Image (tube, rainbow, N blue to C red; front, side):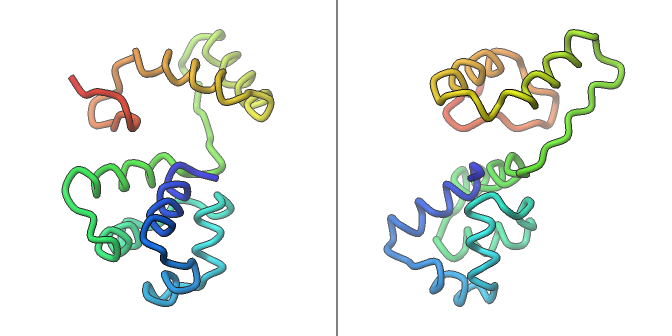
Length: 132
C-alpha cells in the first residue's frame, strides 16, 4: 500500500463510501481505484488528486497534504546515487534489498532519522513532521 492509497482508503471508510461508489462518482474504474489504494499502480495524476479532494471536500492544508502523499506514492522507486559517495550508494542498495524485512518500528526509526535532514528546496516534508 502507498501513503496516498492508505489515506484515500481511510477517507472512504470514514465517510462510509464504497470503493465501487467512489469509482463510479469519479468516472474511473473500480479496478483502477483499488490498484491505486493497494500500490499496484503508479502515482495518480494531479487531476485525479484534485478530483478526490473535491469529492471529499478537502481544501487548503489537507489538500496540499494529499497532493504530497500522491508525490510520495510511486510504488517502484528509483534512487539515483550518481555523484554521491560510495556509502550513499551502499545505503541505497541495502535499503532496496532489505526494506521488505523491516518491521514498522525500524521503519519509523529510519524515517525519524531522515526527518532530521532538511529537505531540498521545494521538496515537501512528510506528514507529522513540524515545519520550521
